Length: 368
Image 1 (cartoon, rainbow, N blue to C red):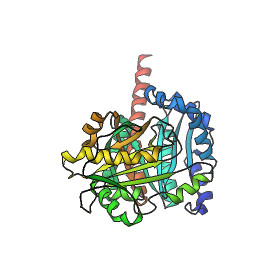
Image 2 (spheres, rainbow, N blue to C red; image 1 turned 45 degrees about the vertical axis):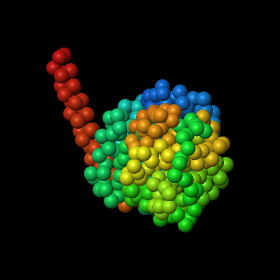
Image 3 (cartoon, one colour; image 1 turned 135 degrees about the vertical axis):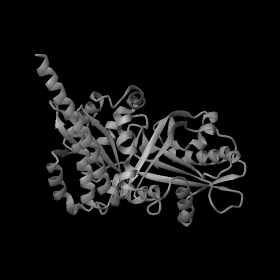
Image 4 (cartoon, one colour; image 1 turned 180 degrees about the vertical axis):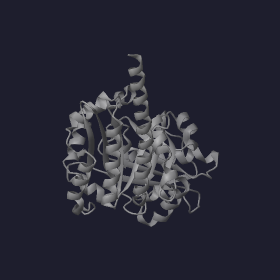
């Protein structure tokens, strides 16, 4: 609770009401039915989720038991007009993931939930945010892909990654002269150096990599409802060099809180200057070390997020490429910019839609 700033809760409920948005009013069954109805759970995604659906539903229910300190679901609209919803869950001490934005063809409702979520974060004043979207998914790519221009590079980043399914315990080639060392607090600067070289300062801040690296404070909050949230890190060193050439950051959390299993992803970072000849060894040493974080993992494959550099090695090793993903992060000082960005985008969209409607009405009137 100490992370929450709970003093603002009455204000928050008033704020949501202003936008015509409700928080945590749908049951988990209702929210999943909305996901099905809107086609958000498309066949490929549903196939990976379905075998574990019982556990996933149970995990969502447990998280909702923590009030709004782990997960909150904003909804707007109704069955008749069409509903929209967004889910927001705590991934790091002050980091939240906004996800599963769905709409039953009601752009007014989807604008409402997005603006209410942004306004809530402005009011809380303590939290960074992130979202993930597929670059070929036109709507989120247009809205979120362009947010850096409004918010600014100091407070926002959008980076494209490759998402692989890595079979657990896949035998990787021997690492040769690269060794992977488990993180300890004496390596905070080394972790910061490799994260900065690969993903930049917004990533470091948004994922709290200079703070609670192992997510101990967050794990405590998850434990309170019978769940876990941890992060394990390994750094790869070459020969006697003191700067790491790579890192593996293994996130663990309640299965299926994100439908692409991003709550359990492993971020594989490779230094941009790493010679191609050393990529296989670095990948092998880091991923082999990271398997220990997934010993009790419910899936056969580890969700792996990495950059283009590792693709060839991973495909040769037998990992399966699933899709590209963009990770958007905006820091707490960027919420105002994010709000303006979303508002501006929807204003144009709704303006176009109303012009279209009046044109159709005129055409219909003319044809009578």
